Every structure is written in C-alpha cells, then in structure tokens.
Length: 176
Image (cartoon, rainbow, N blue to C red; front, side, top):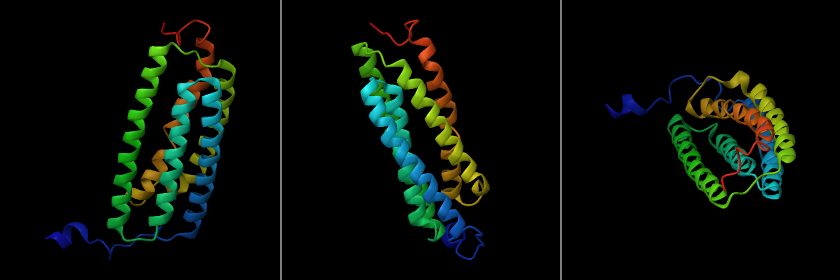
C-alpha cells in the first residue's frame, strides 16, 4: 500500500529536468536576490518595517528558487519535501515580520515616504517580471507550483507599499 501512496517514479513529468524551467528559475532567483539587497538597504535606511518585510520576502523567494533549482531533477518525493520545507520557512519569516512591526509600533518609528514609494514601484516591477517568466510553469508538481505561487501575492503588497506614502502624513504610521 505504501508504494501506491508515495512511489510515483513511473508517472510522466514533462517538466522534470526541463532546461528552460531551470533558466527561468535562475532568472527569477537573480531578480529576487537583487531586490532583497535593494530593499533591505532601503528599508534600514528609511526605517520602514514594510520594506524590511518585503526584503525578507524577496530573500525567502530567492532561497525557494535556489531549492527548486536543486531538486528540479530529483524524484517526486524529494521535490515534495522541498516544497514543505519552503512553506515552513516562509511561516517563520512571517513571525519575524510580526515581531518587527510590533517593535516599530512600540517605538513609534515613522518611515521615509519617498523611499517606500520608490522602492515599492521597483519591487512591483520585479515581481511582475518574475510572474511573467514563471507563467508557463504554473502547473506541474508541488515544487513547480510553489515557485509559481511565490510570484503572485507580492504584487498586492507592492501596490500597498507604493500607496503607503500617501497615508504617512495623515499619521496612520504614527503609533505614539
């Protein structure tokens, strides 16, 4: 019975070891790594928890794409375990983001609106590029689907970051 559950090595997998998918993963890995560096620097300089959180998301995405590159040619079991590890890591990143936001709220820090808006637009463009590159690979196993799903949600957050500067003068960010 265990073989019926977990041994899918005989099932066809059209994307397993696909060189085009590997090239796309390298491209989105590079996009995410560069945006991590840009956003972590800008987030620290601007005192923006939102940019720091988005930078952490870019770091997580870059790590997830690296894991995907590592396991793309492996059997389904290893690719599924990699997808589970990626999900767990993203959950831990989420806990860090919550802690950072609580710290900023407790200390009443106010981020730089201009920096948030400018970097938010750059992040939106980077995520849109990754989304476009991964479009053709939105099917497949859990590992490929997780790579595809990583490219979708950040765009909504980036739109929020570009609009956040409009609310800063009103005092929404000020917690003191």
